[in-house]
Amino acid sequence: MSDINILFGSQTGNAQNLAHVIGESLGNEGFNFVVQDMGEVDPEAIYHMKEIIIVTSTHGDGEPPDNASEWMSFLKFEEKLHLTHINYAVLSLGDSYYPHFCQCGKDFDQYLSKHGGKPMVKRLDCDLYYEEEYEEWLADLIGVLKNRVQE
Ligand SMILES: Cc1cc2nc3c(=O)[nH]c(=O)nc-3n(C[C@H](O)[C@H](O)[C@H](O)COP(=O)(O)O)c2cc1C
Image (tube, rainbow, N blue to C red; front, side):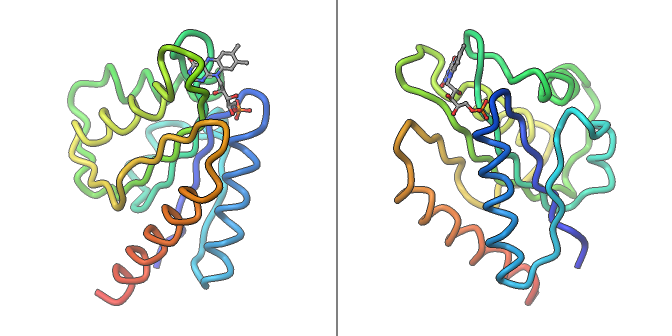
């Protein structure tokens, strides 16, 4: 099985840390994975990926963190992307104090789906306290990934 790409968009480190925690959990389950800073990966590399997990925060007024802006523009403005080979999961970190709660994760979910990507689990939008929902979400995702390996 190819590596699962865990891509993070993060301004102040929270999503970055969580991406590594998710990686550790997947590693403990025997999956091969790589954790990558979105700012350091050419978005066109998505053509060579299969399973991707996007862990991103939202900044500004519903904007992506700086390191995720190139990926966001690519998915938003490229018209003929064929991403039917992509199975994805999105976990967004945000704060419901802001009017555009978790907008960046919502946008990634929308654009990946629009271009043919298939969600492995429903997107999780995390407010300040999210531990319990996160544990459930990760367990569901691991279940789906295990089934995929068995297919
Ligand atoms: C200046 C600023 C703007 C923010 N704007 C939003 C926003 O529009 N929507 C949202 O849901 N969260 C917003 N947040 C909250 C962050 O997404 C949240 O704190 C997140 O955990 C940061 O993760 P990071 O350290 O990976 O960047 C904002 C935070 C800051 C400091």
